[in-house]
Length: 323
Image (tube, rainbow, N blue to C red; front, side, top):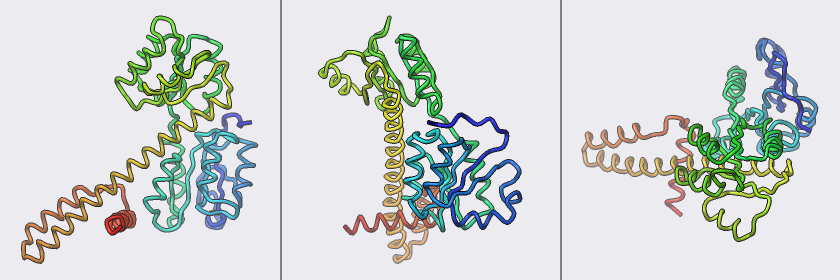
């Protein structure tokens, strides 16, 4: 059972780290400030046991623990089986994180913080809590009992809106562009299939789960070909619906992370070519040409990469070109 939401004015955080505790414990109030109530765990299992018993505002996880790594713990949290799946997560790392490390963190909607800069960790934690954003789900369903069941299943983790007919649902989606649409097929005024077509005509990548009580496999396949992502049958199995939504949101996060890595690597390839051009220009005594290429490199370099990340991406590109 997921614990009830927090009402305490203090922000309760749970920390799974054998490194951070000795850094913070000697002057806990001075380190964390007055706003945090902190509980430490030595293992991933201890953290999950705590999360099952009470809610927290944030989980802080060291990259490697005695019994598991941070990514497994983050996936367990995001599963929603033991706590709210939208719980803010901060993953602690040593040294400069790699581009791959940051990409995995983004795919799990986790922030990162460095153990090399412990004084900055409370600020990172506060930022993760303040920036928590619940994804939005639009339920387009004319059956009030079914709509309420879906709302109760998803309300703890997502910002849920309900529309009771196809026309209102389409209007609400056009106004707010919800992250996920739960769409009944049998709707008054405007049928669900027409709503699906209109939504996908505007945004072909919009995630949509079709709700159906009776539909043939051929109709399922036709709707999948139109662009629907998944189906869920009425009456709802709450656990199946939650798992389906979590799975879709994780797929979206992974796709975003993949796109970001592809963009970084494309930029790295372009800059590798510019570096080669600059080197040739210098050997030929053409300093103005070299300066132009270097200026273009600096102008196009991603601003959110650390030097170490940029070097890693360049190394990846060099390796891929060698292969």
